[in-house]
Length: 490
Image (tube, rainbow, N blue to C red):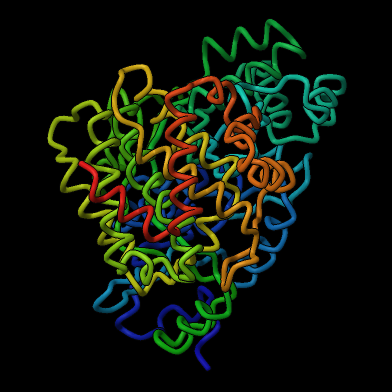
């Protein structure tokens, strides 16, 4: 049994645990983070903690917030331990722990307190990790869905917003009315152009409430795009037990993650920002190339191994990537069809980055699961795989491996847990995916015709032929034979 984590017990923790050396009582709020879960605490909170350790930027403490039931549970857990979190970096050759003290408060998970906190002039950055599904986007177009019932409800009654974006608009309206400057809205979610997406939702809702307010938001509020990267599994009893046994800390909500962190942000902050470049954050004029690199190599890498790993009976990601056939498939796909699509970034070697991706996937200490990678393919594939296919089709470049990835996903959907150890399909469009996948024997377009996912790609004859070919090979010779076949083909 370890020590319960709190401000009072910090001094009694072992020397191998790094604890805040700064006076947390001197921290003042500057960031309000919405969706305060594991990723924020392994990423943004760690960067701020490092900065505070330098004796700098103590007016940029984090206030937590959220609109989901999980946020209520997180608030309850963190409040009992003075908003402290244990973050464990899981190195393959040993782990290290630090107690992160960047958080100063957590707003009750209700609309009125959240709007009040957003209206506080001390809050100059509002950051978000609300998952890709939290932005009210049309699945087919990727654009703001102004017809969503919850958006229509906020537009009809903006005084009592029920969505996060309604709360943001109401708080910005109050700031404008009181002559206060706005805040920067910084998305940390895994979305292409996450800042532009966030801007489209906030401005789109504001347009339906008050066009003059929308014009003010366009003119005064900034929405920087950012690329975030740190593999952070969800916390289970395994992680809590590890923190207790290895570091002697009883933490109700510890975070475990890989030691790798990267954060690239467009340097557009309308109300100032902490100098996080001093602790490793990269501030750039245009984040798009970094973002594309991460989405198409790390995220698409996960997608490309997920379904083949599941179909071959693997449960852990590190075990799957240690399979010579799966690793060869991942490397061949990236080198032949993904890297050739990427634009150069000064100082970045894509082959070296790919090597680091494989090494990160192979970190057994992370305990990342194949089932997690397989879940929600209908939202992941349109961001990680389909843009590369469209890009390759436009440029007349090969798509055989990308088509095979789709065929593996399709075969996984029609397997639906029926094969040994294959995790069941977990997806908001599971019924549609199963139906389409099961009809591909008679018509390969049946799967690609799911417009909520593929839009018009069923009309791309080159893709349809390649997809049908790989499905045939999978059916006739099996999954392993299919990826071996692709690796052999130059």
